[in-house]
Image 1 (tube, rainbow, N blue to C red):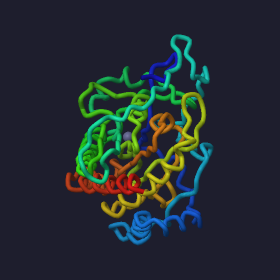
Image 2: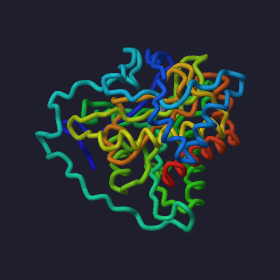
Image 3: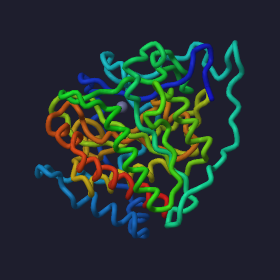
Length: 342
Ligand code: ZN
């Protein structure tokens, strides 16, 4: 399925080593309504307390508090010009839902896949999107073609980053996603992967979003690790900004995705001990973006998680550890379970 205009299909995230992105200044403002809500919901409260009590493994300060303030799409500042991954989408010449060569994709009614076992998540569908693809390196022309993400165009897909030792982000995302799938299946969920190392490259970010939409997913998560500067550490969860342009309309999923993201962030911190990012999100571990096709085009609650910075030695030591990746999957699973059980 494609949202594409004259360009091919879609794209999504990606950061570069030299990506300061200048978005670290946002600070949390306590919101009484949310505090009250957390106090009324045991699972939310648990996540809340974990979030506030647990400090980083290196004795760093606990994060300020969750959640970060809601931000409009305009608050998602574009990346530095040198950051080809995270750059804001370029204006779409056709502003384009329509294509001169083919009509816009007609949204199909979601079809929830059958299956799933017994357990508390029986009947729930989760789509896990392992970021990038190990084969993307061999298919530059295919992944570099541009796709329409509603408010602009981006690359179909990107290669992702890697550790200094050569462990690629695509290997990491697949491994964590498979571990996460197993954990969610144990809870009875039906789980789909957008790719499972079973295709040459991609899929494009438009398709990654469409898979979640078509499945009528109750929750979707895109798994990544960042490629930022040495010394930049920690995880962050990316939430969809409110985007209403072209084929993108995230307005119905902004609130639910934030709920999902806050729960995932809290559980991820609690289980892994990985600190919230010290370079994005002002210590909240949350960021909001309007330039990721995988979020812009989603019609179901969806977040991205950047589990750590592959270019930092401390983070890389964790990301390359199978035992740590199991913890990462456990944290993500607990966050998703919390969201789905409400
Ligand atoms: Zn990535």
